Length: 356
Image (cartoon, rainbow, N blue to C red):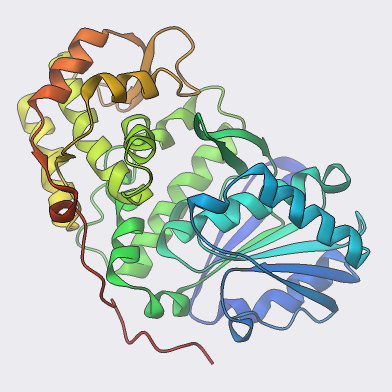
């Protein structure tokens, strides 16, 4: 069963297609764009990339934070030049969330913008990174500090890709699904995976349609991310993004409780939801509270002092100028565990068989 979810942004509107085999629609999408050439940037085997229907160059990529930088963007743009890509052509990403981010930014910058189509192959990329037009790369000093808004022409979330993922990569995506519970998606725990993906995308599509450029409502999508990003950086990315966001989600509940924004039952619900999805609930040992606060000060939302998206009587909202003392006290109360106890061992969620 396939589902089509529109993202309404005027002339930049597009559809997110979700379901088994939707990658086969790539040639139709490219034809609709009128592109004569396509550069496919793929972190997956060549056989995972469907036919584009036009002249194509396949450029290899690697998922992961180490390649999510400006050097990779520059290298991709240089390859676009060699291939003769024009503004009337298109770029396609095939891979996880970091590949989606990097390729999206390269497409935004090359010739001041060429159409991009995303084929997200991980759960995290399907429920979050591929939708909404936020593209960014990291600097040594922080995550996603250099980027641009560049909406894709289409997103093809082929659920067949997910059968090949290791269990830890599935958990990485579930971290983003868990935080949706607290920003308007409702309780997704009783749904199947495809339904959770669709619900998460539907929520994000509605938010992005109302606030494309983070001027208000879109801040809620960063629930759990302020501490999550700090944990990723402080630990040298030993924690995956979704794992860190899951811990950040529990922290957001505790902080909202400490600020009397929510009651004890709602605070406890944060842990219950994260635990349901099998995600980590404690801070990793060896990371000092002061270091986490220092990194959180660099968050893009922190205009004056610390800022967090927090639950409250009217739902989640961005709260500015949160007391560092209160933040430190909440962090100190959280349990800590060795990193090896927080992360899942390697293992496959599905068959691990390559796609035909």
